[in-house]
Length: 451
Image 1 (cartoon, rainbow, N blue to C red):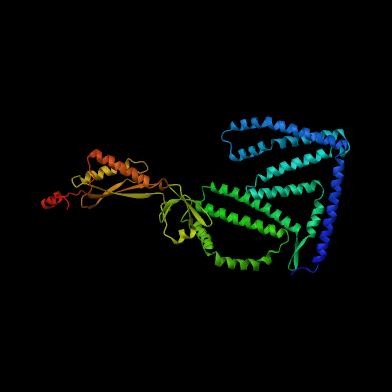
Image 2: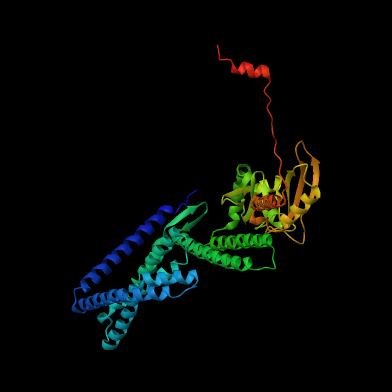
């Protein structure tokens, strides 16, 4: 329900806006007429000369800076990124230095500000441009960076033209009715700016904390991920609540609305909520952690990251599977490195009946021990498991401790070692053979030409 005084409020807003616009036009006319004075033209010429000198300095300093950067091996990436920013804004940096130097000289030479006010405006604008350019580099999102850049430029321009107070009055007089209360455009802008600053601060803190936690060897990988998630929820939630509360928005009034939205989302996003809860359970019980080698159905690989909704599993062929956390809780998962890194592998083979089984077992064990990645302190064993139709069947068991290095490749290396060892000792690997006997009647029928 709208407020009863909304027409009066709209009239006041229009009146204030009209007065402000007229004042801006008067100031613009005075400023334009002042540019025709000799002192103003002199300052414009000085600024043009300073800009040309800054452009020349940029062309001279840019190759030297690039050559110096190439000699700095091992420099961190963040330092290289900032040096790139400095290289791209060398002209502005030199112009700021020259403008402030020229302003200091003009202030010493002349007592009246009209002799150097254009240089002062240019120096302040250029300095503000540099500050905004460097500050917005901290924002990774390109769209947010542009918004902050334009907002900062608008505020700086209004500040330098001394129109910030009038603009605030106009924005504060424009109010939006919200039931029995109302909120002004100025409060909305304040809240958006404060919320953006708080969110960026929360993002910086969480990233810094996450980097420190990732290097903490005293914590398990799953506890690191859980701690990072908790810190992100706490800081981002605090930023949103503080930002909304500072501008005067009553958060208690959102309780009923958020409850209704929560019920609706609960029915529509059951799988999403289930994956979120499953992710927390996985982090708490430490059943799966980053770096573990797992098998889930036909997927075999190692856990790269544990997200809030899914786990990233990278296979040996470079494929990355995003497995929902719910599947890791409800499905059967083989964790090859859950309690320890030791994995036992089995290889089945057979030899001919005329080969000595004692020699075959000895040769097989020695061949497996000579393969890299096969553990020596857990020696391989070989057993006879049966007498087949054409071979004596054996099983060779050996241990490894690095399943992340792959299982198929180590099996292949052991098979090759067995092949070489059997050829060296004259041990044969039988294969099924078939003998076809041609009966005389069948041979006679085969010699007859077809009818």
